[in-house]
Length: 140
Ligand SMILES: Nc1ncnc2c1ncn2[C@@H]1O[C@H](COP(=O)(O)OP(=O)(O)O)[C@@H](O)[C@H]1O
Ligand SMILES: [Mg+2]
Image (cartoon, rainbow, N blue to C red):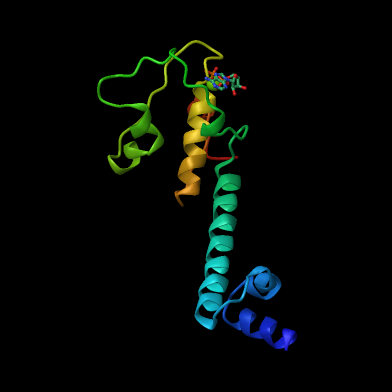
């Protein structure tokens, strides 16, 4: 039976269900089917996010949850913390410029926004300014 489940999942390109369906509690047939399919979906989304984060080649992984939003940031009137963290600049096709002295958290915030974008399914690429300016910047 288990071997058959594995075979069928393989044929249907369901990568996670065969190994993990036992974690799903059974109450009714419909609920079980829903939760098993939801498990496949969330595992796929997680794997996709991890792939996108790896592909982005961030120098270091940094997260919005670890960013200290103290009073040191002067926001322009055209945006706010909420708008930035919601990645509204992507929909609007706008650039974000973070200006400040070394060590004030620009790279942390830029990376964390990039990771947030990966988590929403966007393809991201981390470049340093010096690499963009180098003649061979396309070669990694
Ligand atoms: N506001 C902040 N909240 C959390 N960590 C910060 C903050 N500002 C700086 N850091 C930390 O200090 C270090 C240097 O910050 P970084 O983002 O590289 O600064 P910058 O790019 O502005 O030179 C990093 O490890 C970063 O995580
Ligand atoms: Mg920096």
